Image 1 (cartoon, one colour):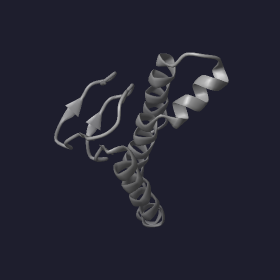
Image 2: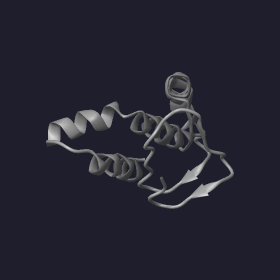
Image 3: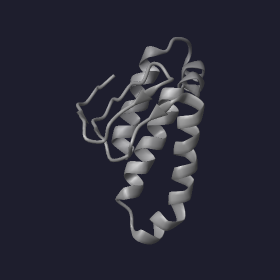
Length: 106
């Protein structure tokens, strides 16, 4: 989860303007970054032991539901998306889990 997530966040960070603090805050406020964080968390969770899944699964479902409701972004954790994912808009965006996306997908 770590390397792919950082590549996703860095891609958005590079599009933003301003000083380091401003870019960091705006990056973390971005609906696309929030959706990607939840997506990568869900993928990471799938690879964990059953007990950890049992504890963290409800948190994932709440966060994923909030992203869908608030931003209209749906990224199934079963989707195959390479590092560097950038979501530049929100609202009415859904990806199918059967699709594969290369590194640097937009």
